[in-house]
Image (cartoon, rainbow, N blue to C red; front, side, top):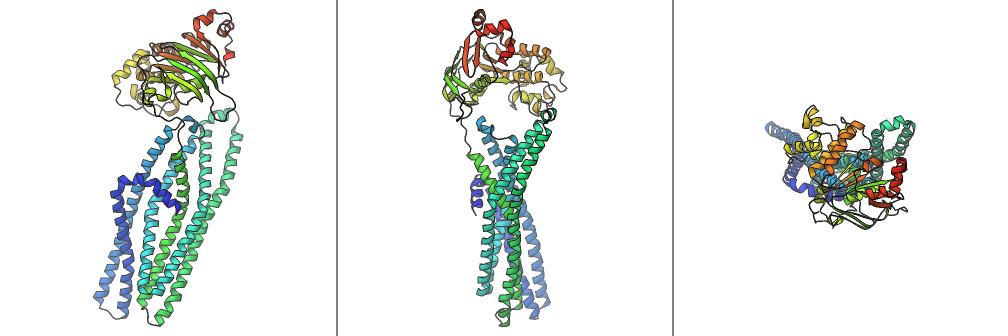
Length: 582
């Protein structure tokens, strides 16, 4: 039972805090099994007593005992089922939290190769399968396995021949189903993989509905939808076939068990070795064996699914980041210097094309750098390296004189801020979106920052002010308003380095006035990096860096480059051909 061992290895750390409940669960389970095993003995005594002419009071006591044990068994079964479900969900909820936290710790190279739909299916779908499996496994599989063992032991007590026959019968039936289950697990793993791929595709399609419809891509997306389902169907059929094998095997087991009881019981009764009550007891126990084996069989499908889910969850836990956070140093106070020392970078290890090639850059504290270049020249890559979303392939990046890989993660995130044209807002209040759910930031601090950025009036105009609920994906606010909220987030952290990556490329003129005023305040007394396509965006820059094909083609003070008629920057200013940067 490899999946069971793997399941226990995966889940046991989450069960340790719940061990008191686990003890109660097994106490309920064992007591219920004892009631279930003892009850047929009362039936045997009742039959033998009735045939022997026992007193009515004695028979009545046996009948009352049978009813009490039957009712007690049902009550204990309900309680055990409740505890198993409660423990399973409590344990797997903790697993969900740790798995989500682990995935959030992984670098972008991992997330670029996984769709959100796939990760949701793994975190929620696979872990839910494990929770359901735990609830069923403890009550149905463990409990029924113990019940079968108890019944077989009592069979030996009745007669060695009956005991031997039932032992062989039960062992063969279980071994056969385990074998079928081992064959079917890989089939279910493929089903789960294809299901995750489908949900990943579905998430992409729903997220891009507007673009898909506007550009006439609906037929193509429907073709992909159909293709995935055509690949999924045979896998699902094969997985269900494995379940059908288990179902048919239980029918065969039941027929063989009845034949065994009647074949062994008839001569024993004829020879006087067993009473009629004893024969009925054996028949009843055989029927009882059939039910737990049948229930175990029905849980084999969950075991197959759990086996596939365990492998996929363990695969996620085994994924490691390419950006180990081992740094402990803190950045100096105030504006931060920036240095790129012979930095090379490629998004894939086996990539033929280097995105940044031998980049050399030194930006003094408090200086403002404007970065220009065509799309694909490496501008946004440079910003991602500064925030350590990636590490360079070669060379070093120093912020404030400290190698970025040696900087403590919390300090780095507090001291380096970045605003892009795509602002992520959550379905939460304005206050929670500004503070990232940090309740320790006082309201006075929030209003002071809004005053400093010049957007208090706009914030006060909202229906409920800071408590106005926003929709996810920037729903309910314009692109400019989302940018203003992003600036406020950065200002609350008081960073020493601010990176603006195309932060005003999609704004209307009126909103851009507010943004420009907020940018002036945000960059005051800080080192700044502005990445832009438009020349007007870098008018405030002290230095200009022009990239082309990942290499520096021009770098120097903005005023000096503008005054040099031979510089590329000066040529761009004269011609106004901003499309050269697009």
